[in-house]
Length: 333
Image (cartoon, rainbow, N blue to C red):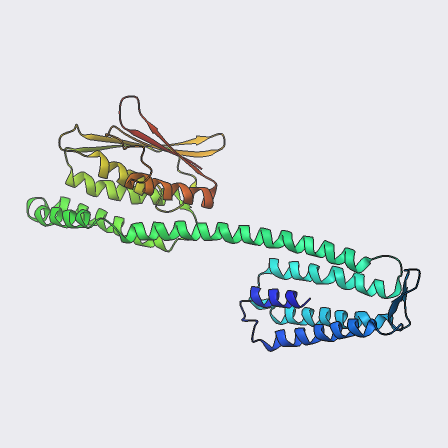
């Protein structure tokens, strides 16, 4: 019982070592322990006969009074700390307290069955399952948070040379082709806005938003690599949701590692389709691909996307090498 008080305070994120609530709990428990000691020197509570038979005395209910008081006290602590714990924790504590308490009350008037022991054992098993479930939920939540933080960091670590080169392109286009400069500024503005607003997103977004983000990014890159980058969109199906910063980083990864002055122009194709089990996005390119080393930068970026897909929408990410060269990345929602 005192350790239950400890766990309630711990779940409510309170320091229990110096808590007056904890001191009262230990005091009640010490009264119970003192009662057990007194019991060994009197037959009024319970005793063992010479032929080794357990017998209750007329004051037997006194032995259970401290336990019942401690149960009631834990109920009071639980309701006092109700706002500081989750609904799931509250229900678990209520069940854990109620089963032994009911068994103790029945045990006071019923002789022959170890109801208190049985009830406490059942409650302990229940609490163990709850703690296990709670830790699994906390682990999953922490992994989701880690994935979101990595996504935010990837946005904040936007490649400086990409920004510098884009601004340089705008500078020269202002004189050579003002209309194209305006279009580039608009696309660059859309790209930046989508990038930074994606950090604040805690849930999935419509695919159309992610596609707009990707189009803006590729429009900027197409100006910089006018004869080296060609993009094809085959996206008739857009009625689904995905985690933010999913498609755009995959496409950026393809551009970053696929464009090489010594190689032929990079062709990127973005396709969407409705499948039997949901939705699919495919990004394929004719670039050089990348190695199977899981510690290199492309793999790390794709691993972060894969983790967020699994946690946020039960999605999958598959990477395959094309027979004719290049890479295909498929997202399954």
